[in-house]
Image (cartoon, rainbow, N blue to C red; front, side, top):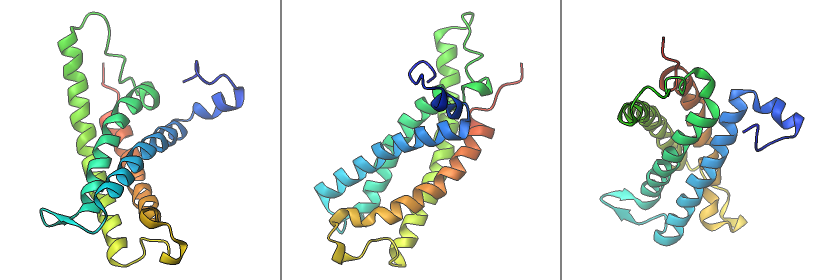
Amino acid sequence: MKRIIRHPFAQFFLRFRLIRFGIVGAINSVVDWGIFFLLLSQFGPVHKFLFIETDTWARGIAMFVGVTSAFFMNSRLVFKENGYHNHFHDEITFSEKMGIVGQSYVKFLATYAMGMGMNILTYTTMKRLHIDVFPPEMGLGIFSKLPALVVSTGVSAVFNYFFCKHFVFKAKAV
C-alpha cells in the first residue's frame, strides 16, 4: 500500500494494522452492501424463499462475496507482518503454497462464518425489535435498512479482527 499512497500523513496511519483492517473492511462493506441492495431491489425484502425472507438470503449471499474478497485483501494488505507470507519462499512447490492458502482460507471462512452468524443474529434481532429502519416518512425505501447494516457489521468486524490476528494469519513458528 505504501507504493500506492505516497503522502507522509497517509503512510503514517497505514502503518497501523487496525486502520488498514478498517479500510479493507470499508471496501468490502461497499461490495457487501452493494450486492445486498441489488438483490433487495430485484427480489424485494418481504418475499419468502425456502421459508426464509429474501432480505435474510440477500444478507447471507452478499456477505459471502464480501468475505471472499476480504480474505485476499487482508492476507496481502493487513496481516502480512504476521509472517503469514514468509513461508512462501521459492523452495516450496505451487501445490504446497496452495495448500497453505487453502488452510488459511478455511480458517478465514470459519472465522467469518461465526462473524456472519453474529451479523445475521444482530440484524434479525434489530428487525424483530423494529429498531432496524429509518422511519417510513423519510422515504428511503430499501435503504431504510441501513441502521441494522451498520450495527450488525460493526459487531462482526470487532470479532473478525481479533480472530484474524490471533488465529487465521498468525505467524508460524519456524
